[in-house]
Image (spheres, rainbow, N blue to C red):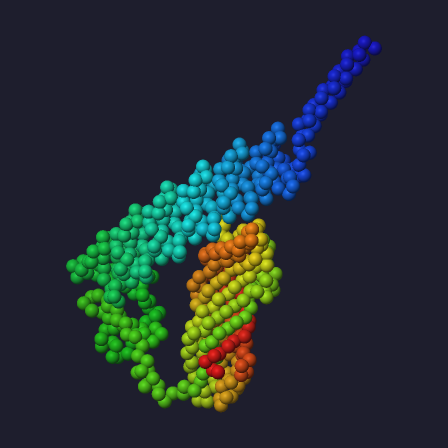
Length: 527
């Protein structure tokens, strides 16, 4: 009996200890009942919802972030918390201080104390103190390498340093990678060189500059080939044997204007002048050996001479291209249907409002029959494609250059992606009456295109105000595209259709989607 009493006392002590701990624990969590919903995102930290708004508190019930936000993310590795309020992103720290103000459309992850940010469709950088050391005025800012980052503004390229100073102005169409402290650049269609400080050590005055080899580079200026040194000074090849040797291998270099495959059969007359003649779209280019150097001569196409030479040829054929196309566009997946790949549902379209408009300004006809009812048609046009999205998301490029989406929280009125391509068709056309050009016809062939520009447009309403935002970017779109094109009609009733065989986005980086469009054609010149 005496042995049971200590056991009984121990059991009573253990019961009261557990009851006290349980009561204390319940008391610690009592403050959570004041909220509509609670998530424990880290030990001792709770995301809470109150009246549909989200905040953050700690284990003592102290408010770190007020419950007035649309979203509060988990704690980051550096103790920061990303917050979304009224469609804008910002960052708090664990003490409840605002590190980055809530004014940004997107904030990427911090790397080495800095993060890329997006505001009003423009990209910049902030540091860990929330200071925008690179202002949001660029269309793209690439990753920093060796203390500098390439930037793109209004279609022109430059460089900024870690202080945000644009030490190489964004005025170049292209900047090649730096090698040996200098980089090749393209400005206003002419090439030159800059050094690592952004100084033009060789003026942008050349049609082409090759790579330097042993301190010598080959240039083309005013259609003539010559040579310069690393300071941009001309070199006399007659006094520089190493340059003369370089000149002899001109047709074997990968960056040459011509290659062996491009050189046509040379006539006897051309052989007597030691010239290689190339004709491209009516322009005669002569490469002439003269005094151990190469000279270029360009002769424009003489239309009057061509018309006199071909005055007896049949010119009655007139195809169907020049005019206006109005239709609808969409895209198909690799299986040929309209379903979108996983994670790309934000690209879903409102087909009825995804409009295509094409202005086919220039047409060239090539007759292939004496009756004038069979021929080839080519030309030049501009093609607008509007992809109207049916969801509140806008496509953007993420930190790795891949396509992603940005949610739109405020009242949305319009949300679309627009592309503009320069188009060139090559079509075979058959007309079923040579007497009546308005008779039934069918035309089929290929359509090629080069992307001139692309942008997203978002129209929103905020407190009754109508706001428009444009973001110009490549969005990973292919610069070149090609596809099958068909036209047919009778009198004023004309139709067209296009299916592109090249994907809308660059291979390997974004969803495999193929543009398709169809609509009506108007030919004012034939009325």
